Image 1 (cartoon, rainbow, N blue to C red):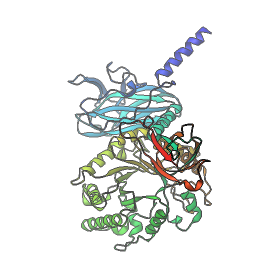
Image 2: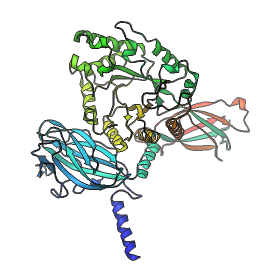
Image 3: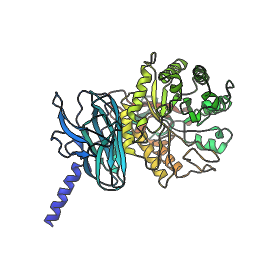
Image 4: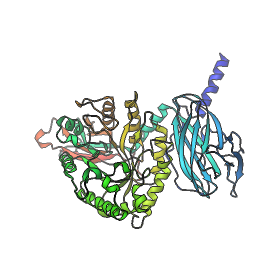
Length: 582
């Protein structure tokens, strides 16, 4: 018995050291996007990585492929590992690790190349294949930080290694970390972030006409507009469909038109601009106080450009693009809350290939002049969905955003990050979080603009994981679900059947809207001092109060806002005090 107890104690100590214990480390949302002379320390002290900061030479690290590796020291005393004499993308160095199933691992490291710039990825080799964990653009003469992660479905030994398609460069790495979290710990991070960033303590006190506390008053609170928008796309099918309208309006206060504001919908024939359908949809939205995101001004994918646009000369294309932008943005100025100015510009570059590399910056310059009152988004896919798509990695996205901001006349513009969020059948939630961490360092608004997950047996569960991660992340400002209904089906994911009865995905959305207080209600009674206190989600509320001593005819419904605490104040330590006299 004593031997078994000792073994159990040793096992417990190992799990605690690995981050599996009850008092495990909290999640580190930080991400440094500056290229630094010296790398920072490894996050989580390296987690389960042996010799994470290379202070013990090459201990724990071995050649991967045919690379030669060595331990080097900079003039400032910083030490790191180097892979050189590389012939293949994977010729670097690796460390063998044992990963556990259903555990979420977050990765981070600092990387540099010896000349120029190169995409560098971190990869996990398993018995079944390869999984990209993170990717960034490494530079010479300074260290770049990158983050990623994965969820392990099959336990066992793996190899963590680095790769770059540019075999001419040396790859330098330092401060590597791989930190495990249980599913319960990950959910706790989300719940803690929601409490901290999405809610605020509110104290309501009821007073009589003499200013004395009024106990046992009944307070009914109803949220009529959430502080954090969770919306759903719609299309023209909603215009004359009462069941569709009822289903949508009972849940959402924000939307995006699926196709009706796109150039190919508004100008199928050159010079014949038709906004009749989008006008009708805008009218519907106004009638019901629905906020609309403008989507989109310019789409760089040639597959979705009209034939006549693609056939234009460069000079004519320049003029057509400017007319298009000025037309749609002036048409709906004051009627939309944002614009996706460019769509999928990291994957496609039709306009830049015709008009030159400054085209993107120029489009945003025109957009700023057309409407300076709203955020201007760069909308892209796979930036948070896929850890293996180097074209739209967080680093590439931020490079593009920086290029746009530096275009002459664009400084001071209200730029924003649009993340389409079209996830596959197994969303990498760890990578999603880490990618948003990195993007969040840019200091501009971030929306998940077209959220869906591909069809699978776990589609509803996967949707819930994605929505929870997006809603809880401190740097995300809004979400739109991409489930506009059509009789023949939705783009990739429907929330209802054709009779507007919820599918499992719709049930998940309803559950989360209720959990997050969206269009929710609370009824409570004041205490002996006339107080009612609760933690409420940010948003606009209507309050009704009743008391046996007060005639109903003298009590009017009142509205109030629950806003985030001021910078430097804690949401929970700075309660909002509302006094009501009647």
